[in-house]
Image (cartoon, rainbow, N blue to C red; front, side):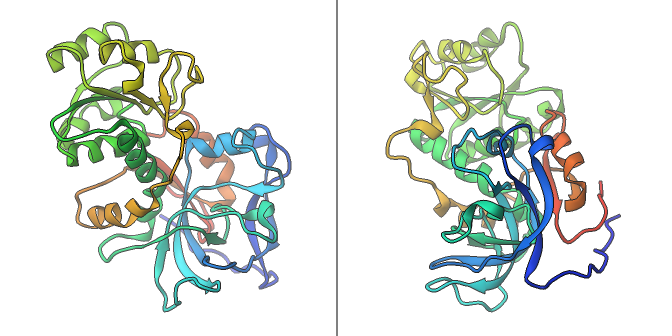
Length: 331
């Protein structure tokens, strides 16, 4: 059961936020503090956060992988209710919003992310009827990255694609997107999701020795494209082999070899353009029951250490979500 938040005697101009003041391991550098609530700038909206879904990218933020300066916040996926609108932003009217928060112009680094009670957004989509705010919070990063990666690969109907890491949330999303585009999908996955992925329409094979041969047997030869959606090292040579030896037909969301093998990396492609425009479409599909991402556990903001430990453990089996409005963790 989830408990309702206990009344806190706080300044109404303050909010709770996870902040970091230097880079390092999340458990060492993050602090839950009371900080000022920010005012949305031009073309921005602010929401009262209902849910913030955690991603592997949050660990990278804390490590300083994406650059920028501390202090700042973390949390890239968020949903909630609009409570303020900047000049040129949306009209209020109680729209439920979900999508990723931004840094602000005037005090950006301190608490400009989603693991807060109020977040300012740079891109958003209306949460449609039939989709809860909790379910909406887990979509943004997986959808945007999945759509962008498959677009960069040039995936078309009738092609065969291998998605390495079909049980990761990036892979789980990309697999469904590829199937909707008419592709034939072979996913590599562990035992947790090996039974669920065929129900979505994918062929599944386990990781480990002989993986290249197993994929070739399923496909009847080399595959057209490959997407490396798992945070695992050492598999890129196998993926290159699966596509017939051409590394440009392999896309990685996290190339640990940093391009030395010639593999393309989603975040390093030239003229990079985020695909926030896809969020509304996949929110509608999720509301219709045609697109889904599993949720592993829900935690209160106060239980952020336990939440991050699970989210970064490779054993979550779904998204881990923080609920700033909750007082106690829930399973």
